[in-house]
Image 1 (tube, rainbow, N blue to C red):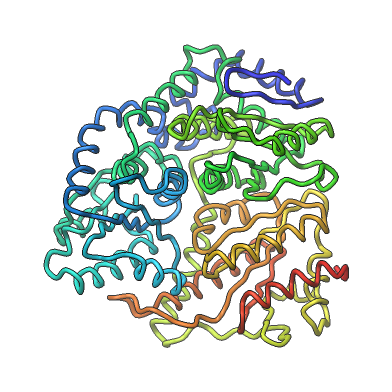
Image 2 (spheres, rainbow, N blue to C red; image 1 turned 180 degrees about the vertical axis):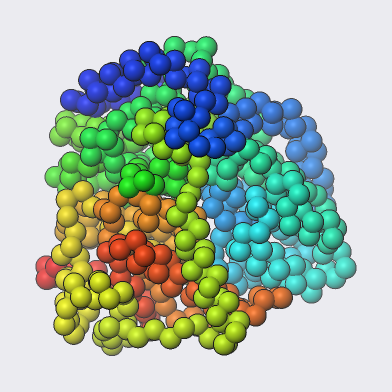
Length: 570
C-alpha cells in the first residue's frame, strides 16, 4: 500500500498505469493548466466558465462574520427549525451537514425537503411549528421546478400561520438576477444570499448554498472553511503532483475506470454515513456522459470478496479516531483478494470542508483524464422536458396520459416500452416477469432501483434489502435513488453513461395528495409526471428499464420481489 498524508491506496497491477498517467500529467503541466482554466484540458467547451469553486472557500472566509451574525440574529428570534427547500446541489450538502452534525445545543434543527411525494411533503409540514420556522429556498437558477413548488406551498402555509409577516420567515439562496431573487424582493424575504454564476450546483457546497445552512445550525463555518482552504492549497500548483491529494484521487479513479473498475463503492465511518449522498451527485452527474461514467455505490453493506465482480474500486472514508475493527478487517480482505482500495482519513467532522474540495478537484481531474466536460449535465434536461410535456397535458385535459400495463399480478402492475416488453414475452406473474427481466444482467452492469416512493425508514429498509439480494444473486453493483432527487444526480449517469444499467423504477398510488398553490396540478400529479417522464427518457436511450407500480401495500409488495429472488427462481 502506498499513499500520501491522509490518503492511502492499494491498486495492485493498476499502480503502473496510474504512475504513467501521473507522469503524463506532470509532463504536460496539467495542474497549472487546471488552475489557469485551460479548457483544452477537458473538452475545449465552456469549462472555464464553471471553475469558480476553485477559489470559493477563501472568498467565503471573508464573509464568515456576516454569516455568523445573521445566524445569531435568527437564533435570537427564537427560530427552532430551518426548513431547507431545494433539490440536487442546493439540498445535498445541507443534508450531509444535518445528518453529520445533528442538532447542536441551543441552535435550530435543519430539515431538508427534496421530494414531491405528497406524504413526504406533508410529513415535513407537520413536523415543524411554522411560527418558529425559517424556510430557506435554495435554487441557483431560481426556476427549478421542485424548489419553486415547495416555495409556493410553504408560503401559503406560512401566511396561514403568521399572516402578513410571512416574509420574515423566508430566506433565498440564488444566483444574481434570478426569478427567485425577484420573488424574494416582492415578498420581502428577510434575506437573499447570492450564488456565484461560475459555480455549478453540485460544486456549490462551499458557497452560500452550503455555508448559509451550516451557519444557521451553529456549525463553526470559519473552521470548516479554513480546512477547505488548507486542502485547496494542497491541491495547488505549488504542491508537487505526487503529494496533491485531489490529483491523486482523480487520477486513480479515472485510470481504474478506464480499466473497467468504474463502480466506486463507498464506505464511511458511521458519523459520515450521509456523505455518499453528496458524492453520488458529484461523481455520477459530472462523469456520466459520452457513454462513460463513474458509478457511485452508496450504503451497500460490505460483503465477502467473492460477491464482487472485477468492476469495483472500494473507497473507505474514515474519521481519524474511529476504530471500526470489523470494517478495517473487511477492507483488508478485499485488498488481499486483489480489489483496488483507497482509504481517506478525515481528522474530524469539520474536515468535511476539505473533503468537499478534494472530491470536487478529483472529479475535475477525472474529466481531464477522459477528455469530457465534468461541469455540464446534458441528459438531465431530457427528463425535465418529458415531465413538462406531461404536466402541460394535464393542465389541458385534467389528467395524465393513460398507460396500459403489460402485466398485472394482484396489486402490482408492470409497465415498459415496446422493446422491453418484447424481451419479456408472454409472462403472466410477478416472479416470472422479474426473473425474465433480470436475466438481462451482464457482468459489468449495475442495477439501479429508482423509487418514486415516500422515503421513510420502512421503505428505505425494504428497498435496501431488495438491492442487497440482487447483488448477492447476480454479483453486480446496485444503487438506490429516490425520485425526484436522483433525477438531479444519478439520473444523468443512467441516461448519458455507458449502457450498463438495468433500471427497476417503482411508483405507487398516493393515499393522500396536496394541492400546489398557483399551479393547475398537485404534488401527486407532479410526482407521477416526473416518474413517467424519466421512464420516457430512459426509453429514448433504449435502456433496459421497467416500471413496477404498487396499487396496495408498498412494503408487502417489495417483500414479494425480494422473496422471488431468495427462492432461487431468478
